[in-house]
Amino acid sequence: MGVRPASVCSDLLKPGGYGRLAPMLKALTSAVVASGATNLDEYRSASLDAARHAGHRDTAAEHLIDVLGASKGKYELAGNDKLPREVDHDLEMWGCVACNFCVTVCPNDAFFKLPTPKADADPGGIFAGINGRQQYLVFSELCNECGNCLTFCPETGDPAVIKPRLYLEEERFEAAEGPRFLLGSDGAVTASAGGGADEHCRPSSPSSTQPKDCRSDSTELRRMGEFITP
Ligand code: SF4
Ligand code: SF4
Image (cartoon, rainbow, N blue to C red; front, side, top):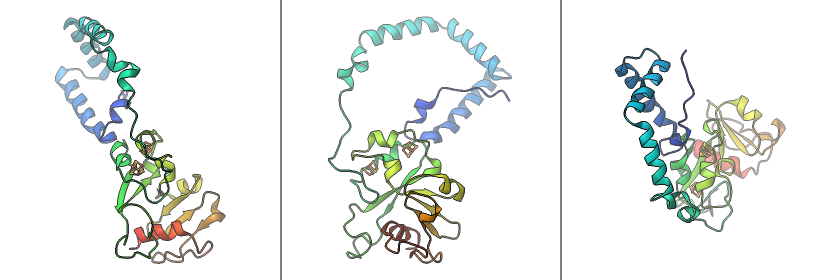
């Protein structure tokens, strides 16, 4: 098919994530067409010749002089010793300082936020005592465990593991580990405390947030039910 690996992973970790890929491919396609090449090998060869002709080697040499000279500080510890902001708190499934970093730095748009249900209107409700007007959740099926949210989260812990992890496909849900939720196409929510299927708590109906089989005190499932069946 003429497909070749391309080293764009660092760029895809910038805001926009994999959404940046489509414009990149369009630009590449336009450049290949404009060059008159009929495949990527031809395009690469022609581009290499053009770069050499335009003094590419000189450009690389100039860059090397710069990074070893005027810009050297940017590549040394002193220029990179500012640590991300931290707060002295262990991250929990519900509630956090709501800095929104996990949403903005995720290259896959796996993280999203929802308003805390009835946080003000129902002070005795299931979300009573939970910090923040927003709750942060992650679609595990979109997460490729890049670690970006862990790097930026100011609380202690991995948001991709600790925050409510949602699945849409039962097979993936069953195969996963750790606390997680399955959102059924009928609106039903299934929760797993972390082990096998016998530890799951299933609502008795899509409109019910009460587990039928087990753990009637499943706080996590009831909270998730607040999101799914407001
Ligand atoms: S670890 Fe997963 S959720 Fe976190 S930024 Fe990477 S892809 Fe997104
Ligand atoms: S999980 Fe961490 S990064 Fe995401 S909003 Fe909460 S504190 Fe910020």
